[in-house]
Image (cartoon, rainbow, N blue to C red; front, side):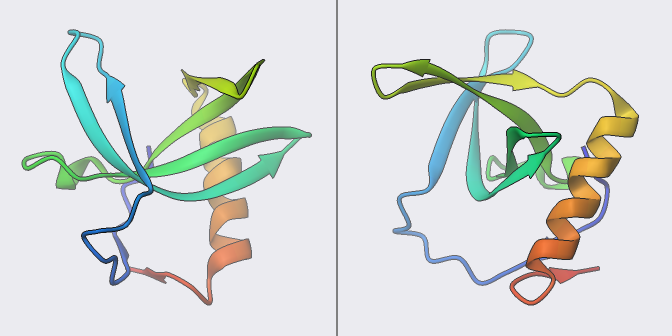
Length: 100
């Protein structure tokens, strides 16, 4: 997770909402920001939407294609990889998001 705050006006009716389960089995709601490719693997950059999770920063997950129009998200636990993915995200989308 990156601690940097990202600002963008996102309409509430946007359909890019992802609900994932945390390690305790609780549902956590995220806004799908962008898909970034690093080392030929796709990663989703997600912004938490649930109250109280705003300080978490973005969450980065690997997108695993399961076929049949189904996918799975794996947490990125390697801090160095997380930093590389976030740097790629910042580089590719610096004109779209305000990084504070």
